[in-house]
Amino acid sequence: MVDSTKAIPDSFKDWQDEVNLLGLGTQTIHNIQLKSASRVSREQFLMLRVLWKEHTSSEFLHYVNLNQWLPVAKQMLEGLSSWEKYRQSFSSSIQEGTFAPARHYQLQVSQTEQDDFGGGVVFTPKIHMTRSRTQAAQLPIRQPDFTTTPPRQTNPAFETPRIDDEPDISPRTSSPSPPSRWSTIKPGDEFMYPPTKDEQIVNTALLVFLDSITLHFNLSVGWSLHRMALTAEFTNAKFEARTDGYLSDHSGDIKAIIEVKPMLRQKKKPQILIQESHQIVAGLLTDFRSPITQRRNKPRLIISQDRQEIYISLAEYNADYITYLLTGEVRNNPFLVMRQFGPWNTNSSGAMAELGPILLALTLYAEHY
Image (tube, rainbow, N blue to C red; front, side, top):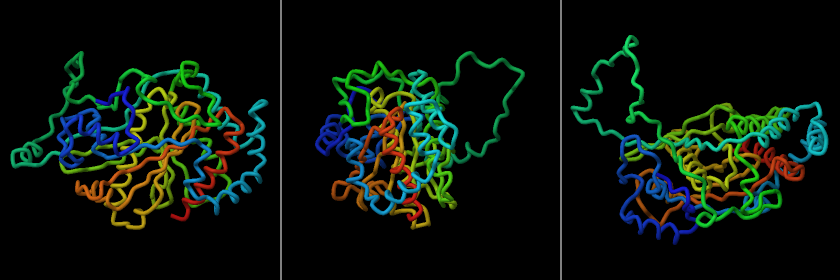
């Protein structure tokens, strides 16, 4: 299972050292052996060959060129009276308008607590159908007997796998995110911000905010709260990564993924990064195996909200990495590099004034790829 105290590799050296330590030098994501209904293990994650680089929110525009879209987005939002009312609501009561529900749920996020982590990734072996297995698969399905008393314990063979149920990370082993000018969290102060009671509150807060930003502009893309399951299949295994929502066009092409968690990222950082890695990998394989070639070469984004903090993560990869995912061939040392930007704090008027136009600009940009 995932070691909740061990930081995610951010360099090739860190990744190689861990691979050597675990004896995985000859393994790939296609030949690593998995147990039935396994939890996502550290070994499985390492074979995805993913590195994570952390950046502050102020660095985002240095990596993503929104010069064409950001001025337009700012002008569009400034034309909404509800946007100005939303900005004023940080220092007064919530005012009537499009953004009122968004602000309401942003405040709800900060008032509740819970510490559950929904894994969101199921890793299972790929069954190779021998003759005996084929015959077994064709046997009649046994119907349940509703007249008998169900057993007290569930069958462990059918336990839904989760990334982890481990305790919170230790600050001595997993490094904190770089400080953001919009983050109110200081290292060591996480105990002051307990996780939210219900992940659905966080999901609602983020989706309603995204919808409020784009609602009045008749765009060809839109944000959805549909929880899509993305599947990645390899030689010996496959996994399913569930999302909390997404941005798509009318044809169903996914432009960005939404992921939420009820606790601060510092509390479960390795598990969260591992889950988001699986989502990006599954999205890549879905598009590169699709006959619609136009879906392949596009930006890969995750918009995340962990309690009251929003992050944007950008994927970087090349053709050699896609070849590795498709075949297991290791050519030119391929890696997927995830760049995390943030956080933007939803309780900060300045952070939301900055983030709102960026999210609208990303949505406008998504209409063109």
